[in-house]
Structure formats: C-alpha cells, structure tokens
Image (cartoon, rainbow, N blue to C red):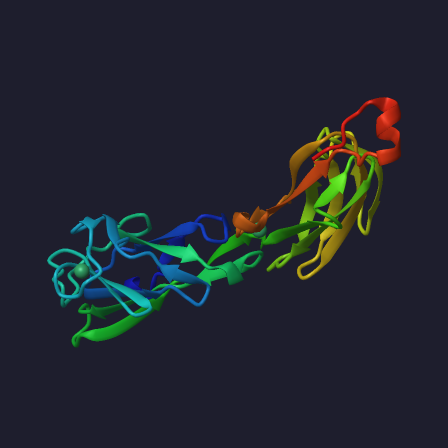
Length: 292
Ligand SMILES: [Ca+2]
Ligand SMILES: [Ca+2]
C-alpha cells in the first residue's frame, strides 16, 4: 500500500442532540506527497456553521476564513476544503513528511449544525484527500477517502399543549370543565410525557378523565406516558368554583426527549368566578344587598 493510501480518519462526538453543533476533526496522515487538498461535504443532515474552519495542528495551524483565495481554508456551497502541509498556499497543497501512523500529520476541523430531520438517527461523514505522489518516476495523482465518522443523534420531539374551559365566566358553586390536549409533532416518539396542570385554590377538584395515563389532583400531575410521533392525548377535569376570583391556570408538558420548540409547551385559560346570584325574595329576610 502506498503511504498516501493510508486511510484518513475522522473524529466526531458520539452522541448529539438535534440542533446541537458538532465539530468534525479530520486528520491527514503524514505522507511523502505534495499538493494535498482535503474536501468534505456537510451532508444532508446538517448545515455548515459559518466561520468554523480551523487547522487544529500541523503546518499553518489556526482559524481560516470561509472565503476562497485568502488562506488554507474555504467553504463553497456545501463543501469545505483545505490545502494542507508545509508551504501550502490558498491555491495549492504543500507537502507533509512521511510518518508511520496518526496522529502525526495535520488535523483540520469545522462545525456542522445538526438538523431536525437527523433526530434519532445516525449521521455519517467522510473526508477525501487528493495528493500527488512524487516517489515514482512520474507524479501520480492519488485520492484517499476516510472511513465513515458515525455519530448518533439523540431523539427529539415537539410537544404542544392546548387548554380550554367550557365557560370562562362562572359563578360560585358552578362546575367548570377544563380540557387539555397534548400533541407530539415528532419527529421522534416521546416517552415519559408529563403534563402539570394544578387547579387554583378557588376551584375544588371533582373528577378527571384521561385518554392516556392518570391525573393526580393533589399534585396536578397528569402522567401521560409514551406518545408516538403524530399522536395526541386528552385530559378532561371537572372542578367546582368555590370563591370569587379571576383565576388563570396553566398546563405545561414535558418529556424525556428534548423539545425542539419550547414556546408551545404550555397553554393557559383565564376564568372569572362571580359571586352567587342572590334571590330577590331572600334579600328582605337575610338583609343582604344584591350585587351590582
Ligand atoms: Ca479562506
Ligand atoms: Ca414544544
């Protein structure tokens, strides 16, 4: 095997969450070759993070700009490229001495923001190095491709909550019925789904019905459990108004997985509890004044 055909290698974090940023380190082995140029695409699963090109070690180490023609690094459309080695210019790779194994040589790095569609999947990335072998009688153009750098991306979900009341204006003694719906917009199945929905002190719990799981009135916790991507669950709570108040109560959902849009995890309903109406015939007897 010619020295230049030693495989390139890549290091990537082994576990990420969608929307995290991943740094791909790409090492190039030392080889008695010149004009080394490395290129690497960001793939369909992520987006290049502008300004993240860097030669980590080896000749010309340091940050590189995304623009072409000013230094060893360049980002163009969906591909990053570096010119490597001693005396590398913006246009042409330099030379690297021979060495038996990594981590000799040079290492470059760039960052990729992992996209939503990659959640719960494995993503892979490869780098390619082109070089010219000048050991023989004639210069020989060579290409080396790395093995796949495989990174597991954590699953992610988007829970949303909608809460409503059958009436937003009641009187003391009347029953209010709240309806809470939690939905998982995916992209992955949710586990350990909990919805916290504590009744205010001006309402007394009567009963609850849940399509999934159970509701504990004392803690206000609706334990939903697993919720597949695209699925929803509903809770109905009946409560009795016990005191005059303007009261808002909120339902908030949570799951084991990261939620990609926390803005829709909660919903609130405000209700007004009026005093009990007075019977005009009772006023004379009780001496109470009718309410305005
Ligand atoms: Ca540049
Ligand atoms: Ca959400």
